[in-house]
Length: 192
Image 1 (cartoon, rainbow, N blue to C red):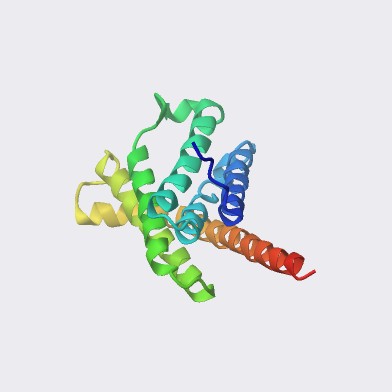
Image 2: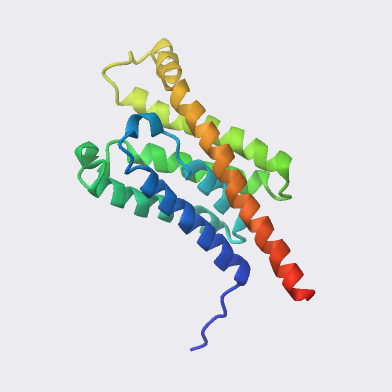
């Protein structure tokens, strides 16, 4: 049996995603949980994974795996009171949104540049907003099951989605910037 050599690019992508997933967990141990609600690197993680992994299966599954692991840690500790068994109620809407974000990023970021990453950031927040709030609305006794009720649910979510937008801009900048920095360092080391 032959052991495959690890691709340095894939290792760099994996390390960046693991660092950001770890930051997500650490960030949630703050006593100011409500002020941090939705200030999360998850959308940036899905965008980055969708854009950087060559294989479609890896680009979709690795970010979801990082999200799952961080969710398991958070819902066994900080968010234990919100847990519905292993995870939380409606988790499949959230995971579905992040799968769609990674897929969208994969399609949009064929030629990665500031424009395509920016489009991915806006698309990610829109996808998260519509998909997760559709789940909230469908499972809600608070919002009427009408079009007006859905719009009301979306309206209530705007402050949370603005935090997600800010976090996605910052974390995407960090991840894509770290990857570009690593590329430059590798090239400059090769030219030494």
